[in-house]
Length: 273
Ligand code: ADP
Ligand code: MG
Image (cartoon, rainbow, N blue to C red; front, side, top):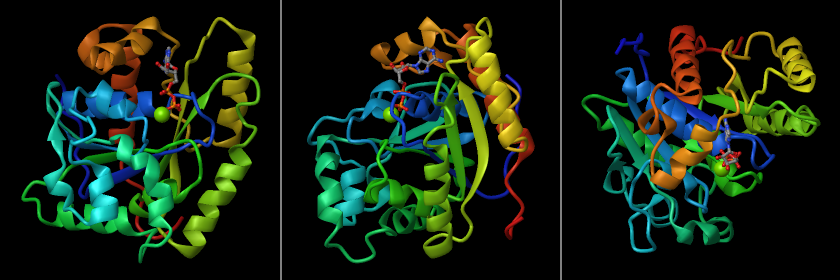
C-alpha cells in the first residue's frame, strides 16, 4: 500500500463531540487503523470507560488489565500499559477498563488533575527512539476531567459530525469549551479537522447538513465523508477495525481516504493562526 508523508513530530488528536453516538470511537479506531495500514506508527488511547475502542482494536481490557486508569490515577508509565493491536501495521492501543468509570471522581482530589495524561504521554514519546506519527484519544461524551485531560494532552481537535437534524446544535457549546481550555490550560489547542460521519448522499437532509457544516468550517472539513455502512457497524463485534474486517468496503475505503487527507494536510503551523 502507499506510504503517506510522515509528520515531523507526533500529531496528537482528541476526537471530541459532546453528543454520543456520532462516530467518535468508530473514527478513532478506523482512522488509526487506516493510517497504520498506510505506513504510519499510531497509538489510540481509549479514554472512555466503556472501552469500545479497546474492543474494536482487539486488545485485552478486562478488570485486571493494566490500563489508562493506572496511568492517570496511579502514575504508572504509559509504556507499561500500551498493547499492540493484532491488526496490520504499527498500531498500538492504551486500553480502558471498567476502573475508568471511577476516575472522574478520583481525579478531583489529585494534584495537576488536568495535566496527568499530557505528562504521561510526553514522557512516553520523549523516551521512544521512533516515536508515534499519530496519537488519537477517544473521549467520553461528557465534558468531565477525563475529556479535559484529553484536551490538554492534544494539539489538534477532530470533531466527527453526524449528518442529521441538530448536527450543529451543541457544537457552539463544544467550541466555547475548547476556547476555554485554550485560554486557561492549552494555548496550542486548535480544531483542525471535521469529519462528516454516517453520511447518506441519497437524502436531501444529509446533503443540506453537509453543506452547512462546510460553509461554517471551510478549512476544517475533510473532502471525504464517511458513508453509513453496515460493515462499519459490524466490525467491532469481531474485535476489528473495518479496514481489517473488509478492506474494500465503502466504509473502509473512505476511512483510508480521510486518513490520507489528514496526512497530506499536515500539522497546523506552530504558533496560533
Ligand atoms: P460515539 O463514540 O460518538 O458514541 P460510535 O463510534 O460508538 O459513537 O458510533 C455509534 C454507533 O454508530 C455505533 O453502533 C457504531 O457502530 C455506529 N456507526 C458509526 N459510524 C458508522 C457508519 N459510518 N456506518 C454505520 N454505523 C456507524
Ligand atoms: Mg464512543
